Length: 371
Ligand code: TTP
Ligand code: MN
Ligand code: MN
Ligand code: MN
Image (cartoon, rainbow, N blue to C red; front, side, top):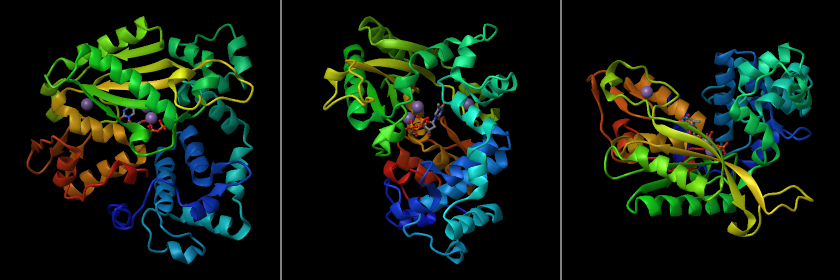
């Protein structure tokens, strides 16, 4: 079943339901009970359970009413026995003992800390943990550890890039990128994606899609933009990934999470003077700039709608939309295309609305996709 049918009909918006928040959000730790459970399973590589908790959390978050009794959750989709037991515990005691046990677990704490570094995934974090490392100091003092360039910059700018990016900062970066793009290709297409497109007030980075009306020029545009940012001395780090898109392979290729578009994961230098108001800063920090993570993706114009839908997220919304397409419509959806398994053909789309129409769904605005 499409778990968001109730969402489209109830006017659900991006500000999370406060009362529900007080249910699953553990006050003393500022963490969401189900997010902690999901993460714990992710760290133990039990993917099925991890996704089950993420889905349950997103269904609960979407409710226009507060859960006050367990019976009220009876008709909701995606809530399993384990989830209901946790809800019951929170309703009864105001806390979840299972979640508290995880939060005080050394392995969980260490993996959480390590994976908070740009460029460090669960596998690497786990490897370091198994070698007895427990802190950043341990890692940086261990001579046999080779850090990738991404990880080196992750540590270098840790304070800045682990601090939330504000809407004003995202807007300022938007102006900088827009200026760079226009200077190179005046009629280029530039679109804000990710959390800020969904109306979030804060993000961990800023995401943009950029492309050219002329097919095949998009990758060169992205490279020129990067080059321009470099010459403006605002490029602190760039991980560029060339396009690996090969349309000839499309029908037999598997539909996957990672897409094949040219893209770059950047760290940019943002000056306080460019931001309306001030930079997000910790008290006592008087620097005139901060580092911000920015993602730029450059799909060819004929893949634009799929790329826009895919990069607008949320991750959970994308997962559920793809799952719906597969199970309910016998269609495969990813960041590049929509394939109808029954008709054995690709379905074209110029806009996101076209894609929702192919799926037989009512169009959902980005701010309604904060699953
Ligand atoms: P993120 O920037 O990771 O997430 P977000 O913008 O929703 O939230 P945050 O404030 O934490 O930045 O990713 C944005 C969307 O892009 C997300 O739905 C997943 C998608 N995405 C891909 O499709 N492919 C990728 O390689 C990556 C990194 C993200
Ligand atoms: Mn983002
Ligand atoms: Mn991103
Ligand atoms: Mn692919």
